[in-house]
Length: 221
Image 1 (cartoon, helix red, strand yellow):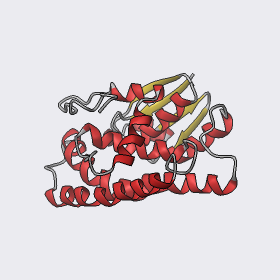
Image 2 (spheres, rainbow, N blue to C red; image 1 turned 180 degrees about the vertical axis):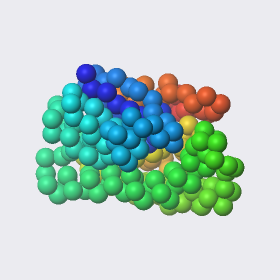
Image 3 (cartoon, helix red, strand yellow; image 1 turned 120 degrees about the horizontal axis):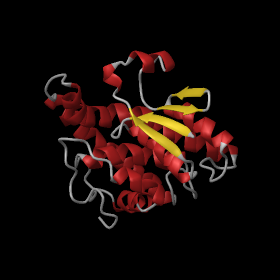
Image 4 (cartoon, one colour; image 1 turned 90 degrees about the horizontal axis):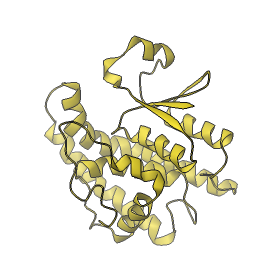
């Protein structure tokens, strides 16, 4: 049995959960609060971050490394294209959302609105929230531009790029920080992703003290 240490509103945890569910792999989910810095967790994963995956005696950290492992060891339902150039594009976009989108948008919105309260580390920084709200417009426009030319973000088939993006956006949707009217193409794409069986467990996640908007779990939003 695979075991995943995760945080419900961690986009990196959600990305790996989507991969596991899409590949129909049974996994035990264990909630881990990285800010608690548990000694036993740090011994296994010195970064102290989530997610962390255990497969028998193997311990893996970092969502990108976990994905590559799962893609090689459990190749059924592949999430990388067969063509080398297409694989590079899928990896490029996955890295875009893991890095650029996360730092410019998710960190400024999710961290300030929710994580700070959970961590009891002070009040939200209004300047960072404003920056995140401004930056997300650029990213949604970029996604819309990609989807005007492609069926999925990286091409004709769903890839890890789509799951990396959906993981970030689903966390922000939980706190109502996405203007779904900005891009019809992005909204249609997210509706397709959201309707997949792999996505449903994410829609049942709840964070105590924070209630998602009514459309969050609605497949026809």
